[in-house]
Length: 32
Image (cartoon, rainbow, N blue to C red; front, side):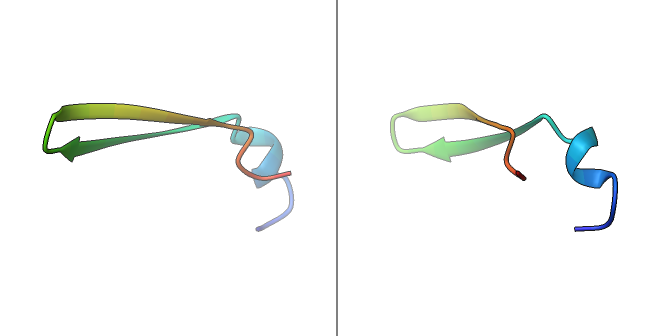
């Protein structure tokens, strides 16, 4: 990861479709 990028990314959200519907998953501070 380039310098300074990890500090800019606080949350990553991924929306995925499963057999029982669509889910939104949030990952807090994915890069430490």
